[in-house]
Amino acid sequence: MKHTMHVTLVLIAVFLFIQVFGLYTISETMNVSVADDGTVGVEYSDTAVGERPEMEGIVSLMYILFGVLVGTGIVLLFVRFGQVKLWKMMYFMAIWLASSVTLGVFIGSFLAIIVAAVLAILELFRTNIYIHNLTEVFIYPGIAILFAPLFNIYWAAILLIAISAYDMFAVWKSGHMVTLAKFQTSSQAFAGFVIPYSRGRKTKKIKSKIPKGVSGKGGVRTAILGGGDIAFPLVFAGVVLEWLISSAGLPKGLALLESVVISIFAAGALLFLFMRAEKDKFYPAMPFVTAGCFLGFAILFIVNMVF
Image (cartoon, one colour):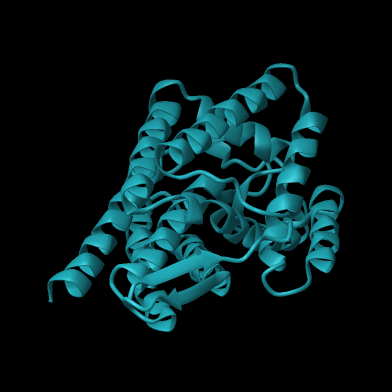
């Protein structure tokens, strides 16, 4: 078992919470209309930072995959040359942008941008476990709001498969994902959730904070859940939410409830990984999360399109 049962359950609860909160936030950006011929259409409100890119299908897929590869390459250069400050600047901008999008769903755009900037500043200059994880809550819905409308079910599934393949290569073959995780945690700017094993004064700062057996360093033992493992299943669930409305013909409220099935199965797959994984080893989570997403969608498809 990778973590203690308590820490494992906290990670799963955090994962589920952000998935459900993210789906609700996505649903709040949807405007559903019904044409005279009964065709259901879903349009999305503009975000606090402006309009989304105008693309779809394979163009959307290549856009995200290219962004992942380029972003990874840039951060690896930061690692190579020890440029922690440049990484923190990049991380600051990501927090600011994504959090602005999420907060803009509930408050005015200008206020959302200001509040998101404050969160990003606190995250970089006054960070502790609580500020860090609170900030993370607002990042992933923003990412999903930006990208879920660019995909249909087919291309969203291809995206999950591609990211899963990349995750396996990056962890088991090249190992650069492990390098990135260590760099991010040592810089106190980790893109993902951090759950400490113990409480007290040592948990106030996110320090080295890879488990001792992995990093070889002291400090408080922590469990981490990478941002991609949260963002990509949420994007897929958001696409399924739209599909349930436009293709299965469900009202938005019921579609929202059913789309949570994707999140539940993804969380179940993540729990399976944590239960079977060995302590102090890194594993690619996306293949397991993707399998859970696909199983959840298969059940929804059967229930809504067959029966």
